[in-house]
Each structure stands twice: as structure tokens, then as C-alpha cells.
Image (cartoon, rainbow, N blue to C red; front, side, top):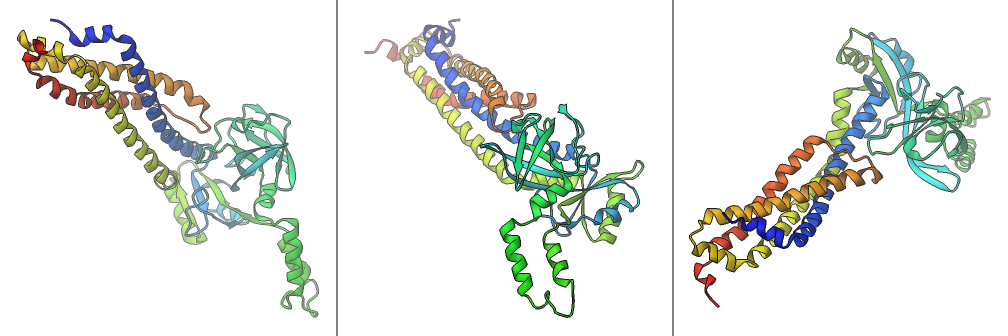
Length: 397
């Protein structure tokens, strides 16, 4: 049996290969888009795992500290530490900012931590943990900082004493860890001009500047230049206690919102990145439609170029199913070339993306099935044309 598909591919293999490579690059973009979404989910899960917490205690009525603003007094941690089933509790602050190093900047999530407690990095790839209460920092390697670098956060410079890896926010921004007190100042305190203006307002306010109440104005001014707010309290649960068992008394008696790992993961994945997921989903649909259109056009063009050969096959008694099978094989061959080129391209360029791209083997297998299905569907137009070819065209003009 003559393999029309094989012979045609061998006859114009350069054109077929270049078409497959072009389709493969488009498929590679599709794989990368799926990998971006997988990377966003993995970033969210890594954020929760790296925190070392079983429970997240935040301001009542909020979904903080990652999805919404949450503000708590830092002395609440002492009451939480005394709750049944609490092994360890720690204050933590989170805020995003442009971190400066010399003339360059990098987008990062700055985390205020109490060293050795929940929220601190569990391991370092270089350097040492924070040992001083001020002006030291740990940085993720994706920030580009090295040991000994001095970085600028608000008004102060911090020396990088340790490096972490895969410590990122839910948005993929690398983390910079500094002592909690420094983070409270950087996040909650006003700039110097704002403080001076606030002092002038307080002094002009009769409620704060009473002649018969000495020390009142000074106390008010002191409260304006110090911060005791944090974004969350991270809790580790004692062995033998379930997180839900520990969370309920905190909600009831402390009037705070408490999330376990499953609840916080739902907020990050199902809510925080939901819009991005829909956006990526739309791109995947569009890319799939474009890929199908390209395959359909190429197979149609190749089929139209061999109408007379198809007519000859019909004239000698070749069945329509055989002709359809030949065209389908050609389409599937184009899809296989495109798949392998796309998978290779996505693997090669994934590390240079600014955000984490996670390529999973099961996604590749699913992608292979989808590519072959698209190619099979795209070949139907060419098959219909081939079936309608009149055998008389073999001896026609």
C-alpha cells in the first residue's frame, strides 16, 4: 500500500519540519502559560509551608495577612501563647516594596520576624541567621543580593547576613527578612516630615495640650513615633492537638479570625489568584484555537497540492477510509513534531522567566493528548475535500 502521507512528507520534508517547529513554538508558549499558573499555585503553597505555621491569627473580619490588610497589637501574642494546645506563637509583618541596593531596585516582600520562631526561614543556603535585633537582613537568592550587600529599606540600611532559596510571596516576589521591630518601623511609621506635622497638630489640639494635665502631650507624641502593630500571629500547634481544636478558643475568647492551612490555601489559590487563573485560561483557549487553525490550514494546503494524486488513488479503487487515514496520519505527525519541539522550548526558556514556571509531567501528557485531538479535528476539513475528489480529475485537464 502506497503511503501518500509518508511519501509527501519525504518529498517536502523541509517545509513539513519548519511548519512543525513553528507549531511547536506556539505549543511551547501554551505549555509555558500553564506552567505560569502551576508556578503561582506552587508559590502560594511554598509561602504557607515556609512560614512554619499551623494557624494564622489575623484581624477579625479579614482574610489577611496575604490577601487583605490585617492589623493586630503585638502584645496579643502573649495571650495566644497561653491558649490550650499552642506550642509556639510569633508576631510577623508582611509588606511589599521596592528594595534598593545602590542605584538598582528589586520588588520584594519584606517580612518582619522573630528569629527562631514561626515565620523565620527554616534553612539558609549561605550565611547565618539574624543575630542582632537591628539592621541585619536575610534575602532570597532571586533578589540578586549577595552576602555583605547593604540594602536600603525606608530610612535605614541593612546588611545581608544570610541567603535563602524559594522563599517567595504568593505573587512570586522574593522575600527579605528583617527583625520585627525594624519591620514595624518600616511598615507603620510615618516619614519625618509627617511626624513633625503630626506633632504640630497634636500641640494645637486642646484635648492633648491641657494646661492642667502635664505630660499628656508628651505621651501622645511618643505614641505617634512608636508602632506596636503587626499583621498576623503565626501559631504552631502542640503534638496531639488538631488545628481546629486550637483555633476555636482563640476565635471565641480573643475575638480574632483564625485560619488553618486549608483555609489559608483556599484564600490564596481560590481567591487571590483566581483572576490570574481565568486570564491564563483564556489565553490557553485562544492559543488552542490558533493552533487548530494553523494545523487545519497547513493540512488543507498540503491536501489541495495533491488533488490529482488522490484522484488517481480513487481511480485505482482506493477506499475513502484509506485516504482519510493517510491525511490523519500526516496531521498527527505534524502534531507530534510540534509537541516535542514545544516541550523542549518550554523547558529551555522556563528558567529565564521572571516568575516561577512549573512544568509538570502530567500536564505534558495532557498536552500531548490535547495536541493530537486538535490535529485530528483540524484534519477533518482536508479529509472532507479529499473524499469529494472526483476520480475523473486524474485524467482531466
